Length: 312
Image (cartoon, rainbow, N blue to C red; front, side):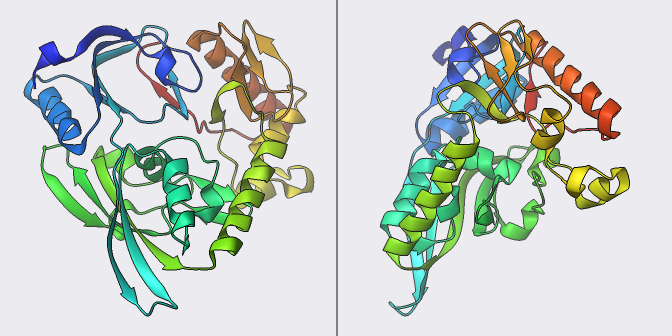
């Protein structure tokens, strides 16, 4: 492929859950693994900055857009790669393209009666993004990185490698590829056979809790700030030693505060919502208002979970 296969000056807001952001210089929607690899190679060949856009969650794209080539990862294959053990207790290896929506993958594993991702039902975004962030859920607790077995990646040098779980050095909201800039092509998960009915029950309870506690039917990128560590909570003597960023923003009196069409959610203070025509600069202003208010009231410096992309 070459640059003539790409769209020019493509508005990116429509591809994000925030519905905010300017255009990409070049834009390509990769539907297959082969197209995805070719698009990444094109950026290398043309010496263009490259950004991979998955499910469009957890990101804030600047009003001036993104320079270089933006590749929308719409790859969608899920394959059972193998299994071991007895029929009663077997381990199954599921390979998913990095563009697969997490909800699609979770539902596939539930229907197959496989345990390891059931608590992630309702998690927005793609497999690649979830691995990049090591997305988590707390009721019951589980990280996307926990059942990862291996992954196919493209290194910054353009090499295709298969790497084990340990390569990612998973931690809270972290994987090593945030720094290494490797690009995930596909991920193999190691899952355990379980009772299908029980797994669906856990999954449905998980998604019900999301719906009860998080804003629904709104334009948002998800949680704005990372929760603080237990050590930080102790050091700053937060109320009830809470580690919740949402609690701190809420108790700094900021629920419902607006800048233009950007608003701190009245439902959950760790969510900023776009009420229709919010700009990235308005969202950033609101982020700084919240950060400064929490710092002043509790002495805590909140770190963003949302990823800023492009030019502001």
